[in-house]
Length: 60
Image (cartoon, rainbow, N blue to C red; front, side, top):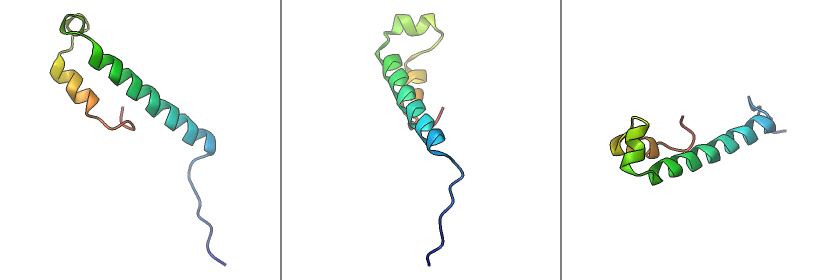
């Protein structure tokens, strides 16, 4: 009989991680759509946005 794999996470945790990744990507897309004036208002610039948008969806 083959050994059973054990996972250190539940289906709920996996679902939560997927939802968080989707939300993160949506927020990054919204950030990328802001114009330079709005970015300046929140203390950011295009380089900050590019660095944030280059992150994979699973990274905060």
